[in-house]
Length: 81
Image 1: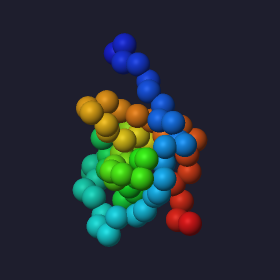
Image 2: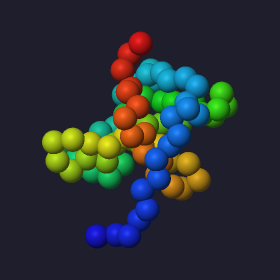
Image 3: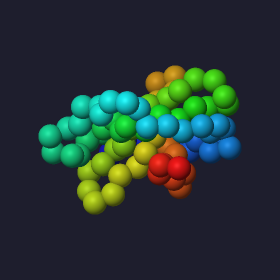
Image 4: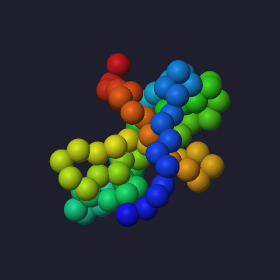
């Protein structure tokens, strides 16, 4: 176990979302700490961030990496609009 603090992203900062044109490499088992998804989000109308998932059971948690820290998306929905 780690004492890592969970940081939730303020979803009001998300100005856009999109699916990338390629499918990122996925782990063979489907589980892991940094599984890339096809989704990207834009924060504050500026930079695009890849969305990753940490998954070790039946459900996963989506996050982005910003300045080396995980920022979890909480209940933000990533569905095609």
